[in-house]
Length: 78
Image 1 (cartoon, rainbow, N blue to C red):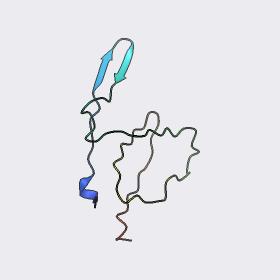
Image 2: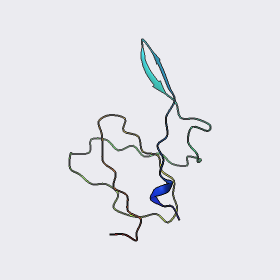
Image 3: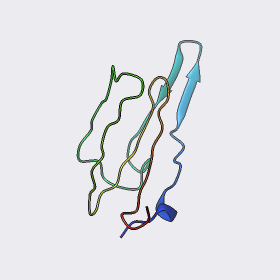
Image 4: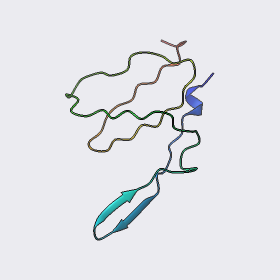
């Protein structure tokens, strides 16, 4: 079972030059195999997404623009 202690920040490699920045996720950038990708966009301020649980899942969250809050619950603690 995954716990909040298993959460980690991952630095995505970035290539910078005069044309702008390029970030690349490949090979061993993330510590698991990516099987599916979701893009959320045009989400109104104050909206909530998710609200459900997975018994076993690895996720990588990236704010491409703006910011968001993530609330994690372990299913045991209120």
